[in-house]
Image (cartoon, rainbow, N blue to C red; front, side, top):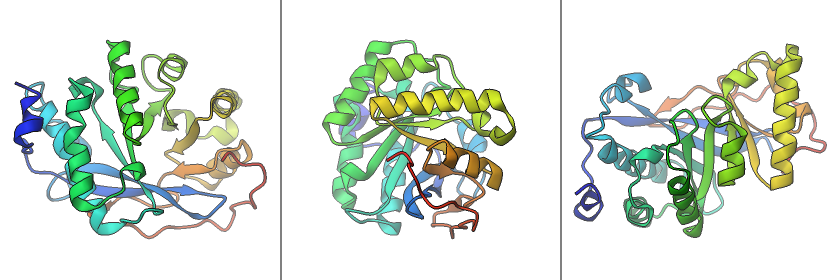
Length: 257
């Protein structure tokens, strides 16, 4: 019955919309991606929305989020070589990967948004109970030229085990690892180890939650080129925010590709 929702059409279980926050490349000083962040219809925060998600409606909500994000993004930044659209999804709301991705693919086709510019993030904060199932999701998404990412890496239940098991295209370092990293040798050592490992595996690294110049410069010196946070822009409701480029950005050297 749950998968019939894909076949019969997805209806959002309640009203919501999206805000967009950029992920920037320091070396190129341009927007690499925009993350779609769920918001209430009047701009209420994500917690207001997520408080309405239940076991009964999480499947419809997950599907509707993807469609809403793609529809809005197609109006705002739709280009074959333009920014990537990053969408969060609930892995435990995906029942049959090949069927559950159908609505996403149809939305991209209908709006003309390039499928290979869509990145689907699953959060490490949601307990992974079926590793084989998650692997099957990532395999299916990659086969369809979608970009796969682990969000909040370093904050959840499995840590480096997720990276070893799933081999996503991208990981997003949790802001808990990033906060005040410029004055914390422990965080620097942990992040440095993750960056080195990802470089060997060909996995891109994004640092999220950047709020200060010092955090930015420390991460840049460690080879992290893709950053997201209030230092550059706050999320903008149903629109793209102006980007603040700090003058302190250093000239690129051997930054991660």
